[in-house]
Image (cartoon, rainbow, N blue to C red; front, side):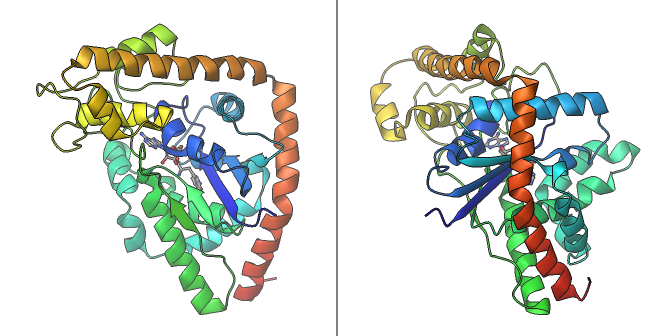
Length: 330
Ligand code: TYM
């Protein structure tokens, strides 16, 4: 029997990237056979800053089709839209009240994103966003949360708040663990390998590979990735962040370890190395895009989401009930 619960989510804000796939979705797909699995589209998280409603709706469909294209199997995994399960909002509200301002102030994602917003004022949504993520995780008695390194702090906050709540009000929540894969947990921007690869890279998107990128465009992005002048294919994140990033991408897709990659490319130039990475990425994207076109059908996606919500709701309802009862609410 699958006893351990695995859960993760992605914000439907922009097209999914190679970073989303390698840092989170692939790790989830690899474990969906052995866990009771939930994956959701975090649409409530997408409205932390204003979004065009029609674009948001489309982005949700795009995200579900992409989950399926990446190998998420709805007969093994519960796939749902966050806003279909109202308990997320209510538990999120409750968990916000268990949290200190200082705890949210310390979140590096908040610090980073609020800097970009500070001209017109910072949205409260950006500030309290982690407590909604806490609720997402706790609602399903989750044991493992596969995410990229940038989300680790939010899962740690989840543990802190679950422990605090359990101490104050009695055993209510299950304690989750984060799963950060050893390779590919922070894929970097190809043009600026000191920054994470993001859905929007504030420029011409040359540093970000989108899963739906035209194959030739994606290859070009890899070929023109910033590297260094050392001329040695070697894993050293500090001194060779660009090359190390490409090695992570290659290793995560093919499962070849760094040592073996280094040996194979000894004495060969960066051009040859990049060409191989470009080919491997192109093959991956070609497969994903063929699948995407197969699954990109609104009727099918609506059915999957309706089924997913129906399956997710009872557990969410039970957990919320436990929490409200513990608090002395209804
Ligand atoms: P989001 O939508 O920013 O990213 C989705 C997942 O992709 C990972 N990721 C990366 N991993 C490696 N390298 C990168 N360059 C990279 N970029 C993104 C993220 O770490 C994440 O795992 N708050 C979350 C969504 C969320 C969630 C949750 C996740 C909401 N509730 C509950 C897990 C559990 C977010 O904004 O992810």
